[in-house]
Image (cartoon, rainbow, N blue to C red):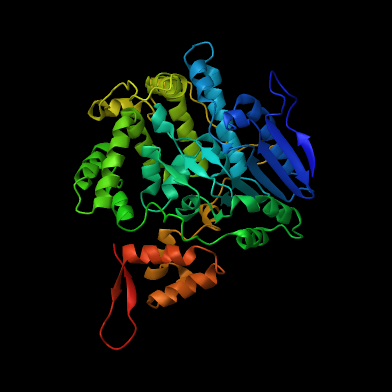
Length: 474
């Protein structure tokens, strides 16, 4: 394998911050700040975009792969540097420009002409999630740790999260955005963020197989990935959000006001089911520890992002980032200082400290076109790459095509909204056979279908001697 460094060593770093490698028609970028968990900084942005654009236009490149060195793919962006720049009038523009360039890189990666395979073999958080969220192939391993931790630091989930989190099943994305909770290992695949689950030890073999594909189209890439996937082991824990807990999550996080979410969690903390009681109490406490302003801004962004394109969502999030940098809330600086600098274990001194004191006027600072905190807001480059080509952004179907079927997919088949499902009712056996044929025996599909059927359907028996069929519960 031939290697090309991303940039000459700078300062005390003996290694380039990004390594670029070529193996036949495979091109791999390796984020390479392992001591910083590969957190994105300005130097990394400087070298990543031109190289990725070069590869996407190169005839000899057939597949682009993202990975990281050490324990992480990427643990996020350099928020300490951003906050430092934002605190000074003379350097505030640098903070906003960092977000702009980061989001433009996210859009570029979402819009590649070449197949893009992201290897989440380690910590993948915040800005790292944005690099891979819209890749058609997203590979989780037992080492994957997924989180959008922004509300912990008084900020708001960004890098396109209002687009991709809002498209996860039910209210799972809302939950992850507000709580900053973590998904690990196989759960990242089972809950829809990753498209495949492959043991970490098989990743070198995967890269070798990808480099040797004679025809590197998406179907062949998917087949190569599936061949290396592994079934659930008996000792592995079940997905964290299924059955009754998932139903409770959808109820609590289905509101458009954070106050209503708090109210439902308080009620669920007294549920008859001890597992629900424990989950609701823990979740309620998590939310009370978060920035109240961040919670309200994040919820509004998630709701708006559900009907936006990725470009629209990124531009909305750039305005939110600009408002934070311009002082629309002091919580960003407070949170970064408390969590990352002093590493305090206490709840940061949020202002306002109480949810009820975060008024609509405060939330509007981040969204309203007339907000003084958005007076110098810019937009990402309207999808233009350096060579003048237009970054298209992913279609929702492309983003989800190789993942497990979504809950909405299963609903559409059962109700007949899916044109391929026909107009006849489905028995459970029929439904499982349909998905086995449609997804070519993809691992995890039957388990996903069965969980959704148990939670969202009723078995209807007309007592006429004919088959019983599934009815979707509204």
